[in-house]
Image 1 (cartoon, protein in one colour):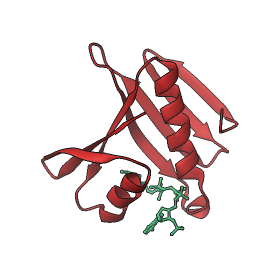
Image 2 (cartoon, protein in one colour):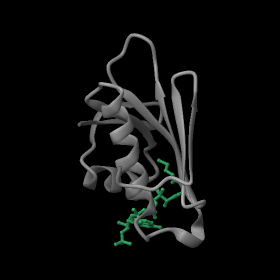
Image 3 (cartoon, helix red, strand yellow):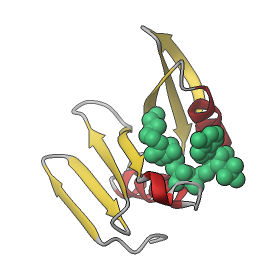
Image 4 (cartoon, protein in one colour):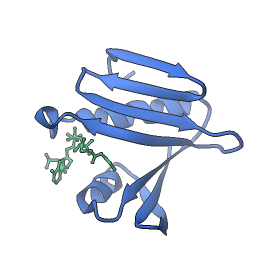
Length: 108
Ligand SMILES: CC(C)(COP(=O)(O)OP(=O)(O)OC[C@H]1O[C@@H](n2cnc3c(N)ncnc32)[C@H](O)[C@@H]1OP(=O)(O)O)[C@@H](O)C(=O)NCCC(=O)NCCS
């Protein structure tokens, strides 16, 4: 594991992660699909740009792999230009554009 989690717990098929008390992220799994959805990513403003978001993304991808899947997907708002570019730097590619959002995915 790349991240030492302060808390990690799950219910249903989803997993919520809190990292160092300042970052959160959820991974969701739906019936009948072979990927995990990354959502609800946020890092406290006082702790941004210190690598926490990247660590959370890496942890989420590891959780998806541990579930036996090899693809991560997420949605990002079109107007959030730098976030899209940030995900692209992490290896995500746009696969759909709909209702003001980009759907992105990464093969793990
Ligand atoms: C998106 C988010 C989770 C990134 O977390 P983070 O811990 O700051 O990310 P990292 O430290 O791993 O990555 C930092 C890089 O992201 C980019 N970045 C972060 N904040 C940025 C900003 N305000 N403007 C432009 N680029 C930014 C930069 O490339 C930065 O690298 P740099 O500091 O060397 O320039 C965090 O900014 C956040 O919580 N934002 C508000 C909620 C949100 O937008 N969630 C995602 C919805 S799609």
